[in-house]
Image 1: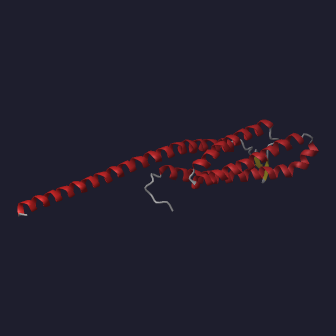
Image 2 (image 1 turned 90 degrees about the vertical axis):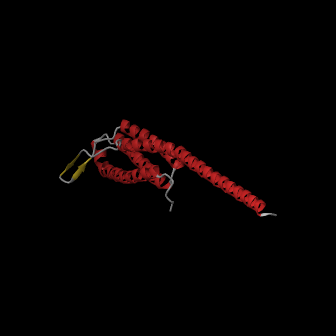
Amino acid sequence: MDSAAQAAIIGALVGSASSFLTAIITARTQRDIAGIAARAEMRKLRQEPRAKAYQLFFKRTPEFTDTIPRLLVIESGNLLYPARVSREQGERAETACTELRSVWEEIALLGPPKVSSPATEIARLATEAKNTISALVSLSSESDDRRAKDDLKDHISKLFQKLEEFERAISDRFDEFISEAEAALDDDGSRRRR
């Protein structure tokens, strides 16, 4: 074979090799771009329902805590509570707790665990607070006569103190929920999970 033929064959091989490498690089680039687009779409599909659920939970939690009966006054170091907790207050707490728990169920499914964990604790505390409010409603209806009211005063006082503890705990967990929800919504998938 003469050198011209060898040069032609080598040129054809180099040309084929470069075309082959170009095709491989192009295919990988297209695959990477498609992967990036697919991940972005998946993040969007995951983030939108989370954002809606988080926003609703953000709204429902204070709505529930607003149903918790409050102290009337602090007088000479003694806490004075409302004389009675009405059935309407109990019903408002029941409704608000039910709405809060329904949003919590969605958050528990959507995750991530760092967000659903404080939401789960808030839902648990809200249920306990609602049960305490129901007990106060029941005791309020039973304590119509003065003597019964005096006998129940310590018990009612303890229930109100429990409500205050629940409210503080809900507030603390709510701050944690907000922080974790913001982090979850800001996560673009580029950080490694620990």
